[in-house]
Image (tube, rainbow, N blue to C red; front, top):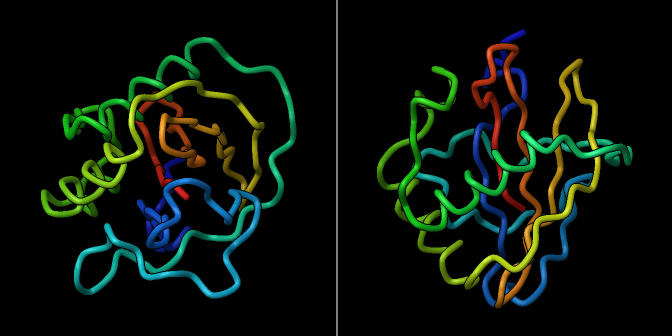
Length: 158
């Protein structure tokens, strides 16, 4: 099942408020009450704030998915995202400016210290995997979904 951007209303959102690199108040299972402007959203917006997700249900972490989560987080931090790993719908929403700004914001968080699987949120028939990425200067939740073929169908950081 492919995820259409119009259905989830978002492909990528980076919701780290100004000065909030030390701690992120919003959690993947909650939509912020009044979302801060996204520093990574291009002019015209990609779709607004992250879609509200139900609380992730704890479960076993899949080693392959965990490895993919860490690889992708590091790729975003380093500004070296392999777009062939992403679904066409995601690639259609990503642009160089968004990738550059997101990479710089994530890079400012410092070296990745740990990646903890928080669970799977089920939204609109889609499994969204939620990882807490703890870095030297703060943490962020990385939420992503996969297509049956393994391509990344959704990714956002909050």
